[in-house]
Length: 160
Ligand SMILES: Cc1cc2nc3c(=O)[nH]c(=O)nc-3n(C[C@H](O)[C@H](O)[C@H](O)COP(=O)(O)O)c2cc1C
Image 1 (cartoon, helix red, strand yellow):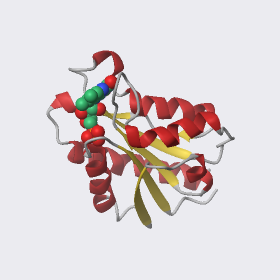
Image 2 (tube, rainbow, N blue to C red):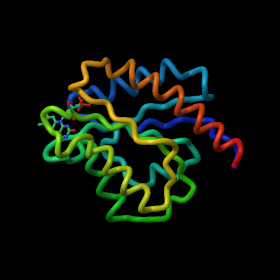
Image 3 (spheres, protein in one colour):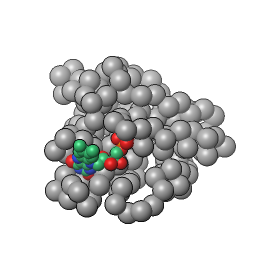
Image 4 (cartoon, rainbow, N blue to C red):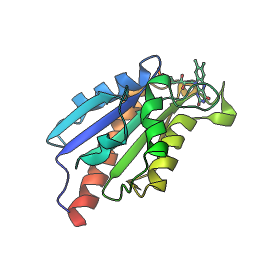
């Protein structure tokens, strides 16, 4: 399989932190891949995975361990319109707060990961958690992680 030329970042957010992380990645990682697109999850469905991009789900967690409001349509469609996603390679940045929500820490991202894996998509690397309680800057830790992750993902595809 040729290495993907595009990174598509799908953003699930309520108060924009995940969006800022995605935008920082778009700027910081531009030298690593031909193109990076940041797309809000609003109104998307499973067909967004029809392309040949490398996918990065960047989503926070709301309610009791749920995906944010703008991610529901996409998340639900992975269950209601299931299809085999064996061609999909993806990563996950999961945002949450371990101090206020220890039982459901980062579950929004973990839910996407579980559903994508169920459909045969292959995660590259581990889920990266950004903890609001850690006192780190989400954009800084997110871009640093993504540079390593992107290198790993592109290497893996070039070898495949
Ligand atoms: C009402 C509410 C519910 C939340 N529920 C969870 C949760 O269940 N698990 C978790 O890890 N974080 C939870 N969080 C924390 C957010 O996911 C975290 O602050 C995140 O950085 C917000 O990102 P966003 O600005 O992109 O939405 C919750 C926050 C709020 C305000």
